[in-house]
Length: 428
Image 1 (cartoon, helix red, strand yellow):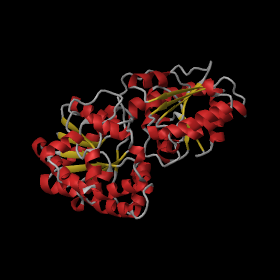
Image 2 (cartoon, rainbow, N blue to C red):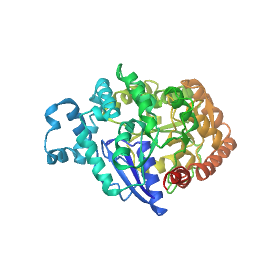
Image 3 (cartoon, rainbow, N blue to C red):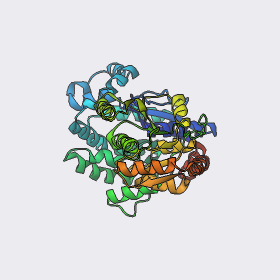
Image 4 (spheres, helix red, strand yellow):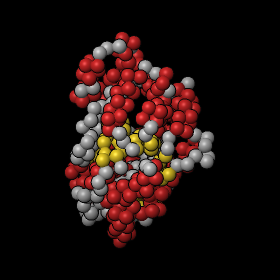
């Protein structure tokens, strides 16, 4: 098949959806398919080697669409000027300031993209369609349902089959102010009717989106995210001292504050004197205030020197970190569509302790590699850590289960095979 992936980039921090699309594109290419990976808005920020065809132009460059939305003069400037604004260095610099964009501006942009025929982005859509007309993909894969506004025009002008993947859209849309929140949900419901195939990374998220869209009979297939297992080494699950790890963006939504509170509880109330903490993952300029607050809380508890902070690490550093852990937790506070970080821990044979909610229930049921605890409950999280740390044989059993599950269910090869089962019937 000839496939194209249109993937929104982040420009400044690692993104699970970006890494999923990149890994899938590389695996499909290795299997003999022609694959293009097209970045949208911002450059792809990856902690692994990019797919060979990921060097395409950036479509709907973030600076361009922002200025065209806000200032009429930018809608009529020559193409050479827009190309300048799409320079990857400029876009990465802008991405580092994205926390300065207001919720209202996010809402305006999201609704404009969902109603793209009525937006100021006609020139940007034309550029994408012109490029795709030369590539002639059999199937175009959209990295998020928030791109669904362009499906109608893409199908009308190119006749291409379109797969649209869900990846946490509910949290973004629910964070928008009114009237944008309701308008975006309503428009998304309308636009998704134009797609050929809808895919969610978990059964939980497929069911959630059916409810939120008010479409209980909506056909949504499930394709769990997968990773390239190369380079992930199995941890020896150290106990002297044990190390409890976190690997996700350092924000409240991912529960990093609960993670720190649970550690303080483990050390102070449960009297586990030698446990250490390692907090790693994406950290943007907008995340620094929370990080400083948590570091102050640890210092006040006399535990600052027991915690290692590793922001924005490389893939090699990530593999080293995971191979050094005893337990892994990301106590996310929102309904996580999947949580690629859990699979990375499984690949390293590290047991999970996760909230008894959302996609974590599926992942732990499939892998038999962890424990579920009540959500938003640092004391319960600490108690589960304490219990596992006193049962080394149970730790070992869960870790071995996790590595087997990663190989069986969450490898990039498993994801590729599932993708082909879903995509091939679309192509005559």
